[in-house]
Length: 297
Ligand SMILES: NC(=O)c1ccc[n+]([C@@H]2O[C@H](COP(=O)([O-])OP(=O)(O)OC[C@H]3O[C@@H](n4cnc5c(N)ncnc54)[C@H](OP(=O)(O)O)[C@@H]3O)[C@@H](O)[C@H]2O)c1
Image (cartoon, rainbow, N blue to C red):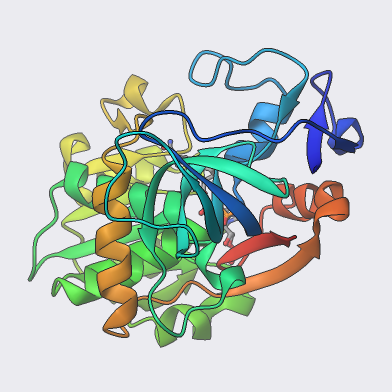
């Protein structure tokens, strides 16, 4: 089968489309014929060797955590899924023609494979940070970096729970945030004042890692009501860094339910052929993805 692989840590040019042995579904796993793979920032962070403590790996390595496709092997002990089912989920080396998934759910009716590949990691992360920051219906959540994959999911899940969201994004994404039910303003010079003029903030999320933890604490009034997923220095200011994934099966089940009820939609910014994984990484690393980028097999 064809698979994207890298043999050394480095820039996008280390990615190669190679011929590889097909993986097989061990106990508790399924194998899918991949139709699309989600491109997450962690993919290029792993490729660069940035996050080896959280994601240890031997080289050469495949790339990718998220995928959608058609089940073609069911491992021992797995129930409730059959060969031929259309699923989306998380596994490893998903930038490939076949991949093994450790967590999956049936794709909601009407969802395309391209769309489905964009949900698993961002929905798990969004549900986790909303839980960890302890925000409830009736409160106002400030989201720094609200237009990316995780931000898009946070805004819609918060809206569903009766939480008011103030989101920051670039000028081109202000209407996008409003369309997801948020109050919107731009990041950059004077952003904290602009947020203050919109209204009171009860809790805040840093999804962009743009060095704004101090201001988020001031706006939320308490470091215990701020969580970052992108600034490893956040704990120096008493703010929790969230880096350990919660239950992916639970997140997929909730994603499927929200999507089916029309409450959650993560747009696909761009779809690339598998052979163009390096371009997808370059574009993701530029830091202005709306929703998710995906690779199509
Ligand atoms: N710790 C964890 O468990 C975990 C999990 C998932 C992701 N992450 C990390 O969290 C970050 C976000 O992930 P993602 O998948 O949502 O990324 P993404 O889809 O690439 O989105 C990045 C977003 O950041 C916004 N942005 C760029 N510069 C900004 C600034 N100065 N201020 C505010 N927003 C800015 C962009 O908005 P505009 O386009 O509007 O400029 C873009 O929409 C990444 O660094 C990722 O590695 C961590």
